[in-house]
Amino acid sequence: MGMKKATLSALAEPNRLRIVELLRDKPLTVGEIAMHLGLRQPQASKHLRVLSDAGLVEVQAIANRRIYKLRRQPFIELKTWLESFHHIWEERFDRLDDYLRELQVKEKKHHDKD
Amino acid sequence: MGMKKATLSALAEPNRLRIVELLRDKPLTVGEIAMHLGLRQPQASKHLRVLSDAGLVEVQAIANRRIYKLRRQPFIELKTWLESFHHIWEERFDRLDDYLRELQVKEKKHHDKD
DNA sequence: AGAGAATATTCCTGTGAAGGAATATTAGGT
DNA sequence: ACCTAATATTCCTTCACAGGAATATTCTCT
Image 1 (cartoon, each protein chain N blue to C red):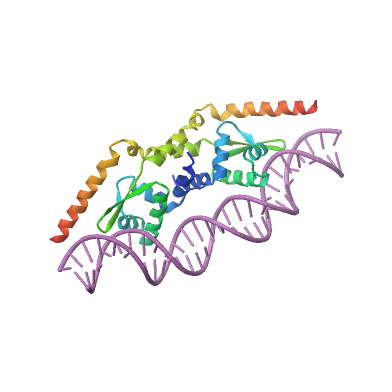
Image 2: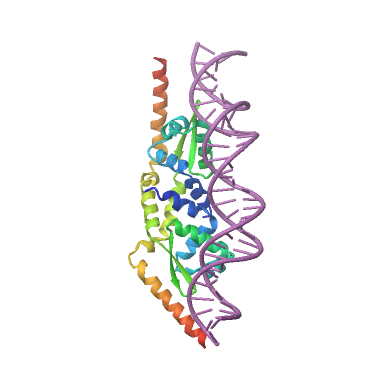
């Protein structure tokens, strides 16, 4: 439940976001990732390290190559978290709450006068 | 479509994440936010500024106070983006793809020998 | 064992972002 | 007009982090 920070900051870096979007289609090699995104190999490795530490990807070594693929858990967690905002995309959210809010404020003003 | 970076890096900061989670329940005043989270007022204002620039919150001025509330759009966008990873939380994702992948690799080895 | 891929790590440097403290701004009440 | 509350902004310092370049590691093949 506190791992959101790791996930979010890993994804906040543009190149890492692109890596993740690339891996959405299929697992890829470091070299392939670097090539697709126009990154130098060391930077690709470094970003993958961060993604790995954040638990967003996992590695599978095959000979020389390291194949990176997405892990499901952090995405599911993020999805779950987002769903706790479900009421936000219900249409009523927009106007209703600040009406209630305004009332509270006005009430407080009256109360202060007592 | 390119606003994900703004959204994600805004949310990547722990205090801002807490602010957003606080505003999930109802719109709040700067002072209320600061108090609830144990932040000093200036830091609260600064974080809210970032959230506002990222389009995550909007302000409504009432007298002295500024009432901050969540905006729906970025959350909907994030939700949509996450859904493009839908296939990841289907059970098959885990084992299938790297089998395919291993095959590709072996094929390549044979090919190189030609 | 030696050579050459594929990948990881280290060191360096610059930049951006967060917190603290102080100050500016704006609105309401008397 | 003044005082006070609520909020925003500025300046400063510190620290994490991204890229570049060079180097280390690990594996395969002969």
